[in-house]
Length: 421
Picture 1 (cartoon, rainbow, N blue to C red):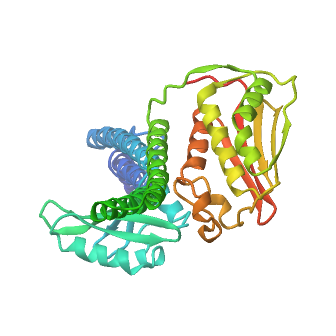
Picture 2: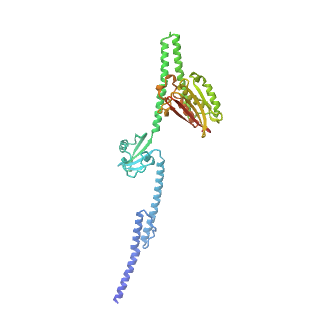
Picture 3: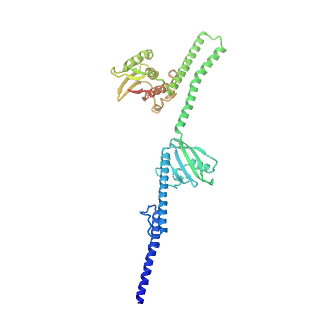
């Protein structure tokens, strides 16, 4: 009988243990497994807890927390995606570092600027940019006195750097944000402007000084002989004409560079256009006994251009060809159409242009080898710049080739179906 009582007691204890395990121990192990999965960034297959009501409530709360975390993660990802889109679209390079000068954030422009496709988080800045200029800029920024700036020379580029310290809610400096703005083109334009002002001043100074000198001579010597007076007046006339040409070319160039060039477009028949030009320049060709060769096929299609502007461009090219041609030399005028373009060509057998000067001959006031250009053939220095702008206004371009002692060829290439915008 006693053994039966023992069996019953053991059975009762087993049932009680099973119930305790089922309702209290097993659910908490399941809760532990769910929490472990959440900690590893995984979403549990189920949050339904078997057993006691408290365990079930914990499962319900865990599911709620995970759902909220997922929503928060989506919002963060969306914001990060938006920020990355903004950073990628930025023209300026962006760099954010912490107070230890370790990289926190960069954009694609920065990585391209410093040839660093991959930059890991917390990379020391000196491993990416080894330039003392940036180091000094960050030192100034960490003082917290406000935004600081400087310039950085990088290969053939000029970069303007703007830096500002970043702070936490307590006002403590946590790092710095740096923007890199490429000012190479601005520097170039500023240099062109300064060169232009200097060149205009130089070009005006010489004839004005000569005119003033002769005027003073006439005032101081009212009884100047008629022969000397004639000579002085001829010199004054020559330099006043030079001033007039310079002013006219400057006004033309200013109008061509303006936003409203006012082109008067119309169809131009090239064979008749070239015949008219040759007739206008016949006297100048004869003065140097130049042989003129015209190669303009009669079957060429008319082109849509501003006739006056095109005439002005070719007049400038002919003027140069005549100036720099030798006596009894040859000037060739030709035109052809191919691949939707009309090519107008002016060639001479003159003194030519050095290879190193050729890329710059369309700049304002640039003269190739001034030592080989005596005063008697000097122009305003604006003719080829005017030609370039006229071609560009018609949607075209200019090209040049030359060899010292053998001559120069200038090509004006214009689209055959130009439509003004």
